[in-house]
Image (tube, rainbow, N blue to C red; front, side, top):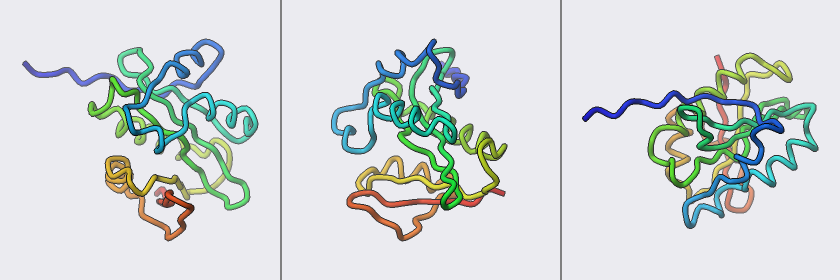
Amino acid sequence: MERKKALTELRPITEDNFLDAFALRLAPGQERFVSHPIRSLAQAYVYREQCQPFGIYADGNMVGYLMVIYDHDVPEYDIWHMMIDAAAQGRGYGAAALDLALRYIGTKPFGDSDRVALTCNRENAIARKLYESRGFRPTGVEDDDEIELALTLG
């Protein structure tokens, strides 16, 4: 039987869906790779003039989370805290969400930069493979167990 591909979309986190983000869970051992959405949403509040947190939805259900933030100092867009719920991993939602986030960043919602950066735990081979498949490359910047990867849109 052929499996139907789920429609994946990004929806802004609002008062209507933030509790769904809090219910997301990582697979065992992944806690060291990404912060829980509770922490991320606190950061989104602090940086609310330059960021947008999103729920990742598949067929109407939240299956993950990510945040896009603009760093005026560099300038660049950053993708923070991308995660897919443990029960929804391995179905392509992360790849689809990353593509949607890059498309959103391409509209330059907070500033005029084509540079997109993110960090990845050096032991998170699955995430790194995904990021590199979309054109992200290591910049040489490292912080403890995190490496920075970046790409230029266009």
